[in-house]
Length: 133
Image (cartoon, one colour):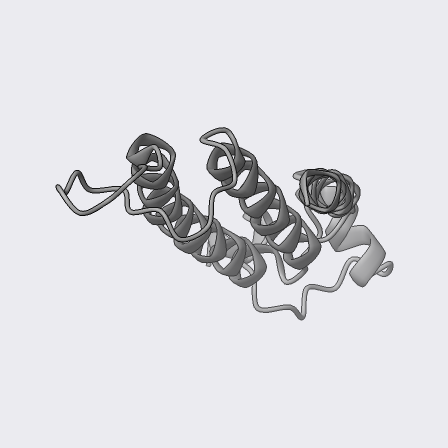
């Protein structure tokens, strides 16, 4: 069972890193999600994989499981949800400003790729020469 969990963590980590290195924002968001899942599973397995043992001390229980990894994973899930929401909002704002979901921050190059004749027709802000009017 440990080999299966270790393989799952390795696969999720490699998929996450591959997607983070893509040039678009949506794969980056998916990559961060995969990477956070891999870290969560890794943290959860740090407390040993036990089945049927309670994390709460009771007189009827013969053995216990470590509750600390479960608390860490619950905290990590909440933090990763907040980070994902923040990244989605930043990606949406970047798309509305630039008109592309490219993760490259060079706006001039993105605009030149979209409009090689220099005409601005995207949803982003106007170029500086058009703002004067």
